[in-house]
Structure formats: structure tokens, C-alpha cells
Amino acid sequence: MKNLYAEIGDADGNKDVVFDIAPDLANAFVDAIRNVVGVEPPRQADTFTDLIATIAQTSRVIQHLETFRELAIVAADKTSPHADRKGIAIAAAMPPSRLYRVLDKHGRPRDRKAQAAIRNIDEK
Image 1 (tube, rainbow, N blue to C red):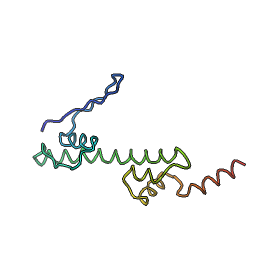
Image 2 (image 1 turned 180 degrees about the vertical axis):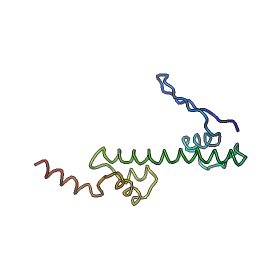
Image 3 (image 1 turned 90 degrees about the vertical axis):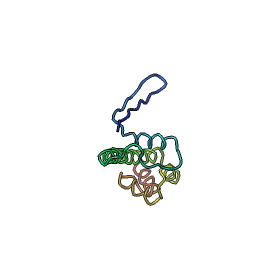
Image 4 (image 1 turned 135 degrees about the horizontal axis):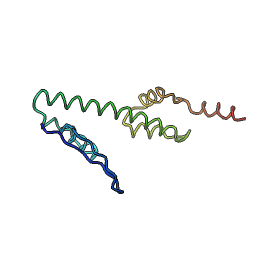
């Protein structure tokens, strides 16, 4: 199995290059970014060793993206005391109960009205 590389660039010509991407993971990533419906099984990894390498690399990417998504959720919630948590949950493709667990994990208040009232008392 021959690993791939990816170049990500901007309009100014700046580039970031990533090497040694498992081909099946690269294909799945491109499909996900393009919002392609339907997920295909690995086609290029066919030996046990290649499949294990693909699984391990995929797991690292998933763990990283899960953490990144949580941080983005918290950042979105911090943008305003009136941030639309329903909209955040929809964008994150998670039920409200899970959203609140993520927010709680990162120290965000469940009841922002009570938090705003406390802030207003402190300011006076």
C-alpha cells in the first residue's frame, strides 16, 4: 500500500503539506469534506498490517477532530450569552443532552440566565 500526501493551500499561496496518509483514510476524508453520501469500506488496504495501520491513523484523526469539535462548540457558546445552543447542537450533530455534557466538561454554565444575573449583581 502506497501512502499519499495532501497539500492544503490558501489564496495567498501558503501551503501546508501532510505526508504518509493511508489512502483509504484520504479517500474517506475527501468524501466527508465533500459531503458525499454513503461510506465505502477500505479498498486499498487489503492486508492485516495495512488495515491495522489505516485503523490506527483513522482513530488518531477521529480523536483529534472530536477534541477540536468540543473546543469549537465551547468557543461558539462563548460568543454571546444568547448564543443559540440549539443551533450549536444541530451543527455538531448531537442531541442537546450531549451538548450540555460537553459544555459542562469545559466549565460552561447550563443556566446562562442565572450566570448573567450573578454577573449583573457583581457589576453593581
